[in-house]
Image 1 (cartoon, rainbow, N blue to C red):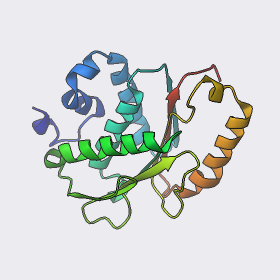
Image 2 (image 1 turned 135 degrees about the horizontal axis):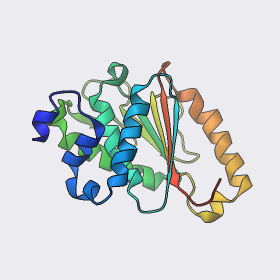
Image 3 (image 1 turned 135 degrees about the vertical axis):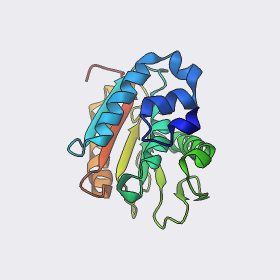
Image 4 (image 1 turned 180 degrees about the vertical axis):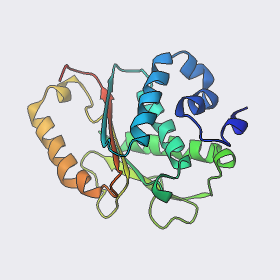
Length: 198
């Protein structure tokens, strides 16, 4: 059934339900979030999307599957996603998961083979990384992307209420990340745990 649906322009929520029906049927709120992410992705004028939810809702998994779905949309002919997390080990986990799911759906979406390392990998013959990133403060210089995902940049409540951490994080995002965005229709997605009201 999923293969037949993917022959047309696949709605993100339908992809989620085909990819992991049990997980998303138990968390229907994530399907509503998926609709908003899809609308954001398809509207060129929208640049930044902020997604804040309680712990253990599945928001990072949602963004991993969003990455696979975005590759299938042929964004600007070549989707280049960079994902930054609070810790490099967390980024590596997400990179492995994204790579594994991209391989899993390669026959359905027509993805070519993946090559590269866990920090930077390529789909098919792309000469620029399809997916790259690292931990907060890590080295992502020299590469650019058209989709940026900032995932759980606050490790704990103490980070979330720290003005010093806020300033350091803002400096990193402005000085390192903003300059890596490519194209007029770039997208920035901030996803994180709602530790505090601000």
